Image 1 (tube, rainbow, N blue to C red):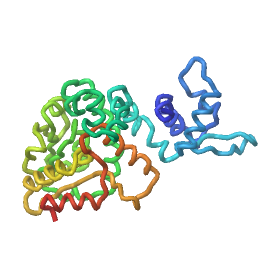
Image 2: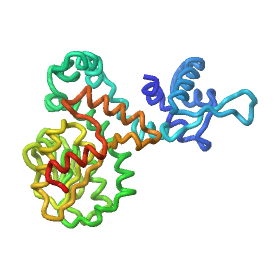
Image 3: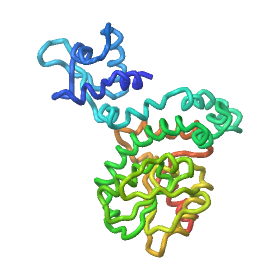
Length: 304
């Protein structure tokens, strides 16, 4: 809740916009949009963010004994243009399942979200278009960050000649980013009917309705970006088998997902486990996996 409060106050954006990426308590307070800014509570919030490694506490060079609060890499990821929208999804629908995690651990049965809402999250989104829009906006926020990294470090898209299908691509933001950089590709966003119907028009992208659990359109390459973690192992194998059937000999399957390998450590390690817990609460068998687990599932689906 402390991080959520910081996002609502736009503290990450305030620090990011400053020249030195650091400001005093009073300087931050002066940038807040309020009628009666409370300095003491603000200081307590900032100190909490320091403990959580969102901020740095820096000795002021100008005033002995005074401190400034500095931005970190994690703080930059919480700016409005990046992860902030995802944190805004902490509304009562999304968080309702979190209150039932202990029951699921003790007794099994219905997954936490299902216990809270009486249906799976995918059914809830189909019946509640407003929630689908809100949830999709949050996913776009995180997708923008990960796609920045994908497009900077992965150059395999340049080799694709023909059709690239983004299976489970939501509103098509990811395939749209690919098309901007690689316009020679024919882009297809493949999604469930109610999602594809709500998706906006994107230059170079064709929205196709369907269910990846049943089939995937023929393609020269298939992108599975942060989608397999929504499913249990049997469902993942089914999706991968459908990918195998849809690809020609020499076709390309591109998987973008979190690697839970304990050796893969970084500044966002805690976020990996946070996302895994969210999947526990929201999905039936969904989870983050290690690269070794992905290889095992790919092997079972005939990929070598």
